[in-house]
Image (cartoon, rainbow, N blue to C red; front, side):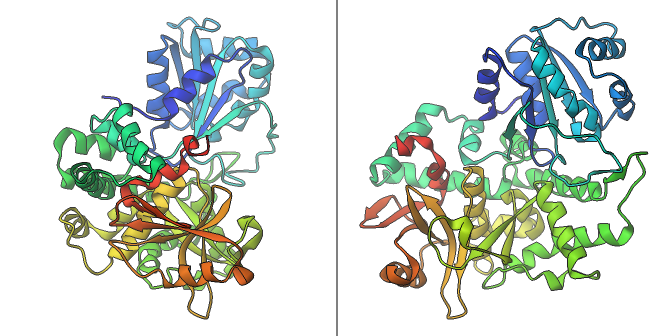
Length: 451
């Protein structure tokens, strides 16, 4: 069973381009890159030639010599003697391409040649110096990149049988700023609780869809976390020898393990000095490894919540969030999942609901910041939205928005800001304040809103 993804339309559109360049799909491990490409080939009746450099490292030898397209096709054909590699009707899929930098280098020749459909994918493409000792240049401008994330709530709805028209009806209430009828409101609230418990990794979602059993989905999440942590330290030199020393791997694991503890603290700011052993540079390297592997994101504090936000960020002050709510739930354990599902979680719910709002924002391609001052002002998130710096208060139910009101009342200090309250609300709008339920956070990234 294949779960419909938003990348499907993007890939179909890419295939129809007249002078298309190779496509490069990047994202966290097990977010569905390989499944999406395989389904794309099947959907478009393309012969799939899959070259996985992780499972078959010797395939990289085919790229050691000339990168002339005809030479490469000849080399690849020897690996697949029973398959005809026909221009336009074949899809060359270079999976885990970071293991073979020269395969990525070949994109330039494939782009200029134009006869073949070429897609590369990788989980560690963003990691600086992943292949230590390799001097292969990295040409730019010869690929189109798609950043695939784990499934968002909209895709979760599709997986549960809801079609685009039904989701579109839900979005209509958001665009019109009208309250959603209570029967639909309660339905989507319950579905969103399931999404929090399961997360967006396709394997976990599929297990839940098949069994409706949260425990089985949780077991999948635990396995994903185990595999992910087992992969820490795959960095290697040109000879394929491991480059991470035991203390380096330990620091990466320690950063990962510290995240739930910091999220549970009142200000949720990650304190680098709490990472075990090593100097400050080594500790920051461990954080950066997780970020470049698409496992976590930094959410920076702002000097002032005014546009452009990136110009106001404080590099040394940040929160660290996993890039999927499923990772958070795997860290907190099955008892927390049971409590969330029953909607009776008390302690710790603020951390989880802030993490799930982050999950929805980042998957909507919105870059969030936060705003915190020693005076006590504390705003969960700040985003650029509809032309304004917009404060976001993420609540598990409803709650006080004193800090946001203070900021909004003093534009002479903080600039003109608006407010979005996300919690156990229905849709409403009053002046510069919008309220929405958790399950509609994904709508903030919809381009339709700006039309």
